[in-house]
Length: 463
Image (cartoon, rainbow, N blue to C red; front, side, top):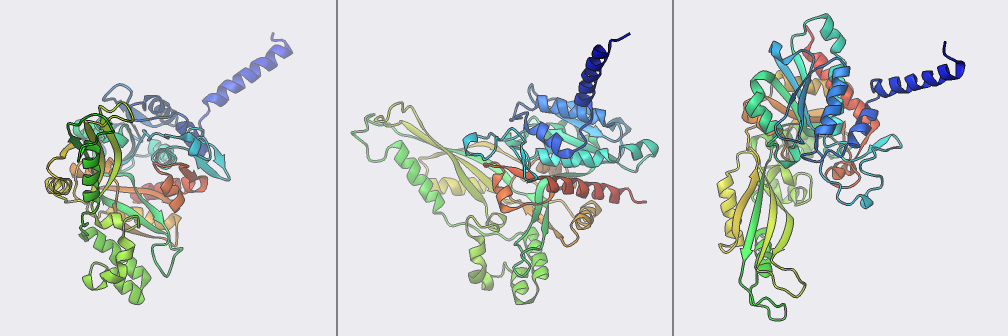
C-alpha cells in the first residue's frame, strides 16, 4: 500500500507527464512552440519531427519525405496517401529567415511571447502561423473522416528550404512525389487581406488570392581590376569605384511598366468597388491618358509598384582581397535580388542588366525560381472566396499577383491549380515585420485564419 505522501507525489508526477503529452488545444500555444525551434533553412528537422508527432496524435496519417540531412518534409492527411483519393493540399514551409539583430526587436524573436493578444516571433506570419491555421482546419475533419468516406482527401504538406529556393523542399516533392500526392488543388502562402485599397472605403477589407507570382532571380555582379594596392595612390577607376558607378547606372535605368491581364482584372474589380469617376479611372488605370494622375501610386516604394514592374534590390556589396583599410581591393562584387513578372524573358532581362552595368562587369546567375504561368480560376478558388466572405462578411476577394516568390510556382509549373492566401487582414506594420524586425500576428487573426480554411474545406464537402 502506498503511503499518503508517496501517493500524492506519484499523483503529481503522473499529472505532470499527462500534461506534457496532452494535445495542445489552443492554436496560439502551438505557434509559440514552433517559433521557439529557430528553424533556419537546413535546420528544420527538429521542428518537423515535433509537428509530425502532433499531427499523429491528432489522428492524421503522416508520411515523411527527406531530401537532405537537416531538412524535413512531411504530409499529414485525413486518409492514407496510398488510397489515391483526389487530394486538397494545404502547404506551408518550416524554415524562417535569420533574425540578424535581436536587439532591434521589441520582444525576443524566438520566445513566441504574447503581448496584448498579439504573438511576436520570427515565423509568426512567414510561415509557421499559416501552417497552424491549415493543420487545425484539417484536424477539425478527423472525426467525420472516420465515420464516412469523404469525397476528397485533405493533406497538410510541410516543407523545408522555401527561403533558399526550395531545392530540398517543394521542388523535391513536386519532382519526386507528386503522383503520390494526387493533388486537385494546392493552397499555400501568398495574398492576404488589406485595407486602404479602395479610396472611398478605406476600411473595406480586400483579400488578394494569388493566382500567380513573380519569379526570383539572384544575380552576382563581379568587377576585377589590377591596382597599385595602396590607398594613397588610387588609380583612375579601381574595382570598388567601377562597381558603384555600374550600380548607379543600373538604378538610373528607366523602368518598364507592364499591366498584365491579371493586374488589369484586379484594378477593374477595385474600380467597381470604388464606383463613380474615381472608379472609372481605377478600372482603366492602364490607359495612358490617366497616367499623369495615377503614376504617383506606382512609384518605387508604393504598394502598386511591385505589381507592374520587374524590380531588383541590392542585397549585398563586398570586396575581394582587401584586408586593410588602406588597401585597394583587386575585386568587388554585388548581389541583386530580382523579382520578375510572369512571362518575363529572363535572358532579355539579364541583357538589360549587362547593358546598364557595362561589359567590364561580369553578370552571373546565383539561382532562379520557376517563371510559371498563372493558375486559372476554378471552383476551388471560388469556394475560397465564399469562405473569406463567410468569416469576413463585408470583405471582397479578387485574383492577385503576389510580388514575391513562393513554393506555389513549382506546383503551377506542374499544371496543378495553385492559389496563395493567408486568410487574415494584415496591417502595414505586420507586413513590414515579415523578413524584418518585430514580426507579429494577432491571436484573433490566427483563429480567424483557421475559421477561413475550415469554411473552405466544409464548402468542398457539401453534397
